[in-house]
Amino acid sequence: MNYRHAFHAGNHADVLKHLVLSRIFALLSRKEAPFAYLDSHAGVGLYDLAGDQASRTGEWLQGIARIWQAEALPTLLDDYLGVIRQLNPDGALRYYPGSPELARQLTREQDRLQLNEKHPEDGALLKDNMAGDRRVAVHRGEGWHVPRALMPTQEKRVVLLIDPPFEQADELSRCVTALKEALGRMRQTIGVIWYPIKDERQLKRFYQDLARSGAPKLLRAELFVHPADDASRLSGSGLAIVNPPWGLEDELRELLPWLAEQLAQSQASWRLDWLIEEA
Ligand SMILES: C[S@@+](CC[C@H](N)C(=O)[O-])C[C@H]1O[C@@H](n2cnc3c(N)ncnc32)[C@H](O)[C@@H]1O
Image 1 (tube, rainbow, N blue to C red):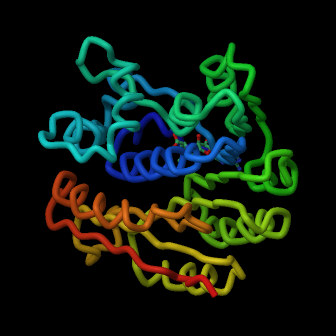
Image 2: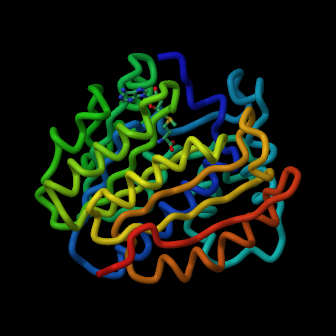
């Protein structure tokens, strides 16, 4: 396990993933009924952008730093940026929330968080960062076992984020397996898989597997910061969203072009379509 998310915290891919998560929490919060948030590969929860790891790559400068400085922000960013403002009350951008901290701040008293991180040091940091919130349970086991170990949840509504490091070649297919296990336990699971876009040809099989996953409906949202013509670099990233809450598609149609404009590194673009349409 070599991957440490601190090197990438706040980059364009984190902005896409965390903004979409914030919208899912907002849409689910329109109803009183509680929901559970499950994060199979949670990271440490909170990142210091001035720390050694984030400073070495500076990826956040092309990500959240651009959004932080942007003018005429769409109101759909309010919740996401509100969390970052709370972490940086003097206005200088230094701390960035990982998915656990975002979820902790954007969920309610009745909601519950089950976070899992396998890396020994990062798991310990996550536990420290989440300490004191009784709605949060931190697990330090195998992320791929999360659907089997923690589902079905006592809450009828559940959001499952599957966000592995993609260090190994089989991780795209493991994501689909984990998703199917989750749907087998709770067909209504709102499942979010994050994936990197490097070689589009490699993703073809993943898209086919997702389309055959048996999910009730599945939305694909992708943001490219470069054209997808160079398989050696990260051109962008995508989210496969199973059972997206009603309204999310329209919101993404507003947000993706705006994000592409803000986060372009050479030539940016976006894509939003259904891999499985509702029957
Ligand atoms: C992309 S990062 C997660 C980022 C986090 N979800 C966020 O958005 O802030 C992937 C994490 O998975 C952890 N990890 C790697 N292999 C794992 C495994 N088999 N089970 C659980 N966690 C794992 C890594 O240590 C790393 O922290």
